Structure formats: C-alpha cells, structure tokens
Length: 187
Image (cartoon, rainbow, N blue to C red; front, side, top):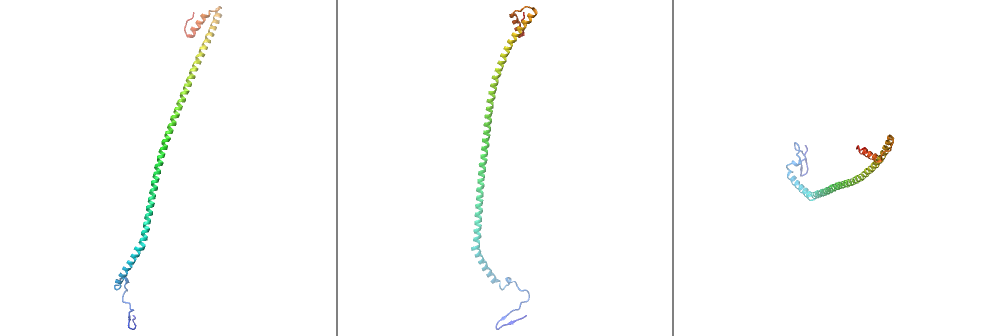
C-alpha cells in the first residue's frame, strides 16, 4: 500500500494484514481502559450515591409513609365500621326486644280487656236470662191462673149444659186443679 514519509517522522498508514482488533480487547490499551473504567465507575458511584439514591430513597420513604398512613386510615375506617355494625346490631336486637315486649304487653292488655268484656257480657246475659226466666215463670203462672179460670168456667158450662143444673164451684175447682196437676182427684 502506500507509505508516506515526512521530515523526521514516519507515519505508518498501512493496515496490518487481517481483521482489526476490537478496541476494548486491544492489549496495548487494556490497562488505560481499566483505569478509565475505574474512574468512570467511581464517578458514577459518587453521583448515584450522593444524588440519585437519596432522591430514590426519599421517594421510597414517602411512598412507604403514604402506604402506612393509608393502611392505618383504612384500618381505622374498618374499626369504625365494625363498631358501627356492632352498635347497629345491638340497637336492632334492643328494638326487637322492645317490639316483642310491646307486642306481648298489647296482647296481654287486649286479652284482659276481652276477658273483662266477656265476663261483663256473660253477667249481663245471666241477668237477662234470670229476668227472662222470671218473666216466663210469671207469665206461666198468670196463664195457668187464666187457664184454671177458663177451665173452671168451661167445665161449669159443660156440666150445666149436660145436667141442666149448676155444679158446685168448689167441686169444679178441685177437679180442674187435679186435672192440671195430672192427678185423678175428681168427685
């Protein structure tokens, strides 16, 4: 290929035969690359540890604090809702008990009123029945008295019609009494 010669210096522009080496694997520059890598790593470590990690750590702490706060708040709400549920269940049980007591009291009151009214009606009916029986007895007695008089008059009229003479009033009364009583005490 071509060689160029300058005054006092020789420049080599010729490419060696074969493939060129990848620069990081070049043995001649390997030591300087390690030093550059160590410096870059140290510089990157300082930047990350002094600037990036504190920010990330702050964000993580903030997120942890927010999460813990949210969890504590959620637990507080849960505890509050549990207390409200227990209070609701207690009130519901108390209301059921009161409702049962009111129902029982009302049932007992109505039963007592009904019993009192029934007794009053029974007493009234008993009084009316006794009065009706007395009235019936009085009417029967009066009717029997009228029957006796009518029977005595009819018997007297029949005997007079058949015999032509007026019968004795006492004898007719005894015969009518015996007939009404079911006996045979006739003369």
